[in-house]
Image 1 (cartoon, rainbow, N blue to C red):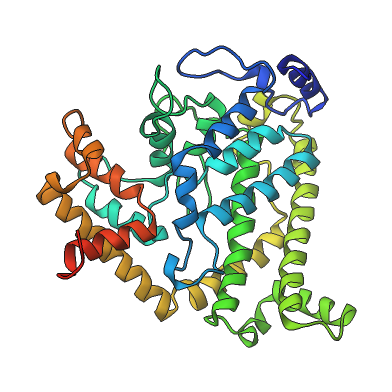
Image 2: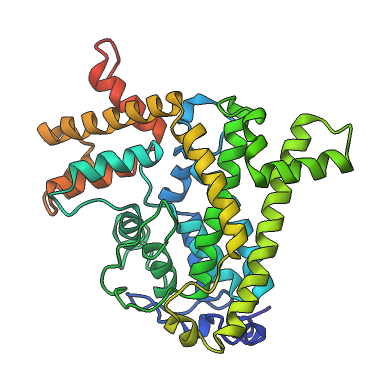
Length: 383
């Protein structure tokens, strides 16, 4: 049997600037180490078995859950981020187990209905401590999950928790809280998850947008990344089916972006003379990043997605409806907390009313929030 010690010894083959599990800052509540799993492997398993992780299946990215079965949910997105991030980490000889654990946990704090749900809770909670899905994700793993008799939450390692609170993309804004306020840059493993998240949602939102019909391929002729790869695929496979061609274009874009990222990151590591974990944290700028040319191309694709998908009238309507759902539900619970389920009602005796209701609403799936809305506002719906 391969023991934990043997697993930790194998990590000596990783890059010197990789975060080793044997050098973890540990857990908030002291626990005995596992005999045949590293601390990060154990964290990954705890995340997968959590209630919040299962709920990601019915939380959405852009399209509300009932819009169709094909579109990506938070769960499928999370798995895609983990796959891309692990590939990057493996190539850079970083800690794959840590990267996978952070990837699987990075969206646990998201509300139902994507960013419109978060906007609604942010407005409601602005005078009561605010709402940020990174901070909510940390609350989930530190407090809200109930799995163990001796402590609240999942008691994850410091580094995974840091990855959750410091997760940063153009859509995710970290607000470090104690004990993660240090001004150093995130671990390279955290940086890998951040860029993998960007790669995943850019390309897969494009995929979903085309599948939904909200984006037409003819609209993409001026998007450089798409047009260049489309020409390559058509040249190599002149009789290819449209569905397969679309998949191959997106696959090729992801592959080329990851390849460029790896090359640029290796150059950055050499340029900044990164030899230890601390070296990487002392550099104020991101080490794991794309070349500037690729960044410009990605920015043009994001601008296209913003104009043609995120601001499409149907998506705006969905977002507006979702905002009203969340706001209305919160007001109902706030007005008569007795309508909350017993477990949540019990928490009101110990916690702030706004925060307890916020935790409850943020933890809902799209489907559950819609069902609750119907029960309160449709007169013939059974309660």
